[in-house]
Image (cartoon, rainbow, N blue to C red; front, side, top):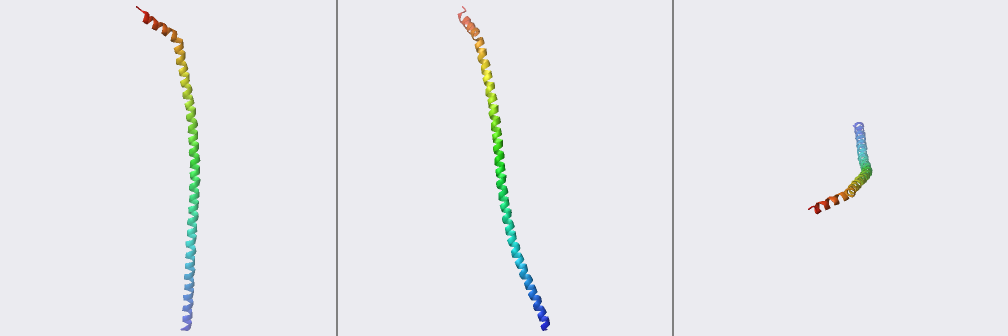
Length: 110
């Protein structure tokens, strides 16, 4: 029985060693999972920051383009307004004498 007992003791020791190795591997695996999660979170944070920077630059570019277009359109509208005003003033000046004559004629009619 001592030989059987020795074999059983050997098997128990081997199983105990295997269990210890499995526990050690589980601890290492848990640590690796934590490290991977930490690295993943850092990468997510970096990507979010870069995405925000790119979006901000794009928004600034769109705003700048829109502002330039609005200023250009505003200048065109202002220029057309000045041209129409000049035409109206020219018409007033060219017809002023005739309008005065008509007014005076209407007032002085008996």
